[in-house]
Image 1 (cartoon, one colour):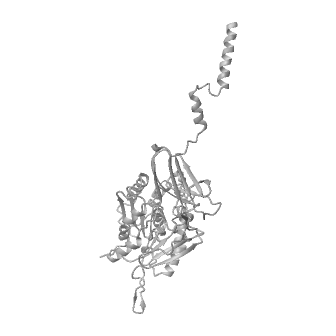
Image 2: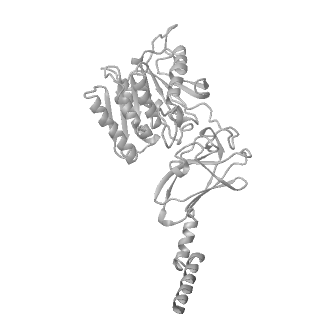
Image 3: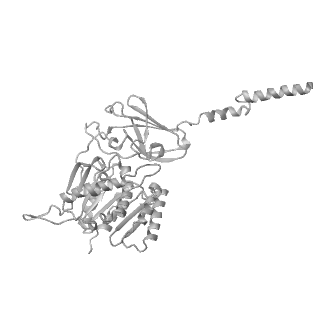
Length: 421
C-alpha cells in the first residue's frame, strides 16, 4: 500500500509538471517552435523607401501600385506605405521566390501618379527580387505628382506632340460615368484639303481606341513609350497601304480597370464595362459624328485596344455589333473573371460578313495570359468554323508593353483598313 501511494504521488507530480510547465511537454526544442507559432508574420525581405516632394499635400496617403499582389496588382491604391519621417515612406513585404516587378507610386489613384520633374510620364520602375540574397532594399524618390507638378510648377506636359493634323478635346465630360477625360482626334491627311474655295465633303471611317494617352506621345504615355499610331498611319498612308480614317484616342482615367472590364472579377473587382460602352455609344460617338465628317454606320466603325483595352474591345464587338463591325484586340486580358469573355463571344452569334476581328498575343507575356488567348482561339474556331474575317497571331519574344504593341500596330491597321488594289 505504501508503494502504491508513492506511485500515485509521483504520477500526480508528473501530470502537474506536464500541464503547468509551458515547455516541458515538448522539451527544449519546442521553445523555438513556440516562438514560430506565436509570431506568424515572418520578417520583410523586400523593402522600398521613397522620398516624396515637399509639395505633397499634408495628410495625403502614399501608395505603391505594381504588378504583384503585394502591390495591389496595379490598383491605384495598391499598398499603403508607412510614414517613417517627414516626406519619407516605407513599403515592406515578404516574398518567397525570385520575381521581376514593375511599379509606380501614387496618392491613391492614377490621376495622382508620380511624374518626372517636368510633369511628363515616366517608365514603370523595375527591379528583380532575389530571394536567395535575403533582404532586398531599394531607395526611390518621387520628383512630382500628376496633379501637382514639380520644378516646372505644372504637371501637364501641354499639347501632345503628334504627327499629322489633330484636335485635342480637353476634359470631355460623361454623365454616365460621372467623370471626364481628354480625347485626341487624329485626322487623315486629306481631311482639311481644299480644292479652290470648296472644302472636301469626303467622309471617313472611324477607329475608337482606348488608353488614348499611350497612343501618340511618349510624354503622356503610361510607360514613357507610345504606340506611334500617328506615325504608323502616316507611313501606311504614304505607302497607299490603307484607306484614310479618323482615329479617336480616348484617354483612360483612374477607373480604367473598372471601365475596361465587362465582368466582375472575384479578386480584382471591376465590371463597369457596360457603363463605359454607354459612354462611348451614347455620349462620345454622337459628339464625334456631329463635329467631324464620319461614316457613321457600323461597317465603318472600329474599336481597338490592348490588355484590358483589348478585352473591352472584344466585348464591344460581340455585344454591340450594330455599332462596331471591326475590332483590334492586342494582348487581351482574356483571363479576367476566369475567361468569361470566351463563352460570351461564343454565344454572340457573330456573322463573318458583318464582323472582323484581329486578335494577337506575345509569347513572352506570361503563361497564364498566353494559355487563355490560345483557349479563346481554339473555342472561337470550334464555335465559328471557317469564320473568314478572323485573324489570330502570336509573336515570339513579344512582352506585354507599349514597345511591343508599337512594333506591330501596322499589322492590324492593314488588316482592318487595307486598300483594295
